Image (tube, rainbow, N blue to C red; front, side, top):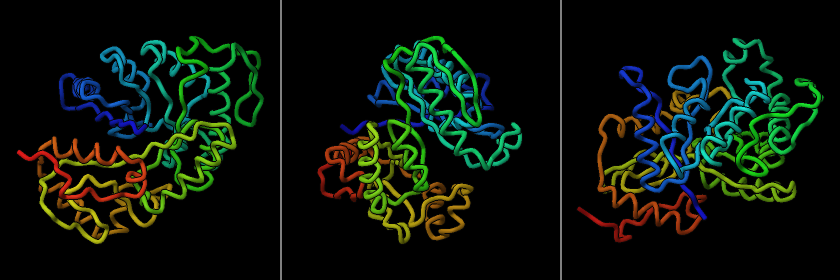
Length: 317
């Protein structure tokens, strides 16, 4: 079954109550039937939550059904025992709605500020994942690794979900996707991957997950907008504003790349995207709802980037 989630917007720093728009957004997402909501994380970076579990606890107190997690939490920047306690606490507060969406991280300044070895983040990530899962699944445990070493630790509170909250990993490189298949329940796919190239990677991921005894879930991060149903072609990447179209570029985003440097590599694409931002257009939300239902009716459409047919019978104003 295809499920849909949303990313919670960042707090409005100019407002008297900066988090009010986050609360309203998440409450509205739950009312509309979305399955989950995520909060992003970075340290020392404007526009991101430095303490996402605190923000998610506030959202949990204002909702009752929607699942809540991170998209993504830079796991190796924190001590895994701290993370295990924080996520377990959120899971109890929310009545079993928490999940951990974790990522390796790519911004060196975060590691330098904390005195952590950037070059060893992959091995630190693997130990963090092992510690967090053991902390949730066992009453007490010991761990002896290159980064963390302790004996007979019991993490409290125990998570509400049994055996533990789900763990998804953000991954781009082949090694990172392989890590997700071995050590996590799912793969969080960034919006920099073209869907036609992504489909065989998803198949390989699911096969490797099955061999590792994992769930092999896949979450596709895609930007979706509302626009007029006018047939307007935008550049060479087959993006049309008369469709809800999962998009990507020919080359995945690099570890040190941002949306701005991605646009530098693809100037025509950037100009097209910029024209949408400069001249926003609004469509009947019922058209978008019909289009999303059409995509969700066949999972292969999400993976191949199928164009939504213009004559699908969407409701018009």
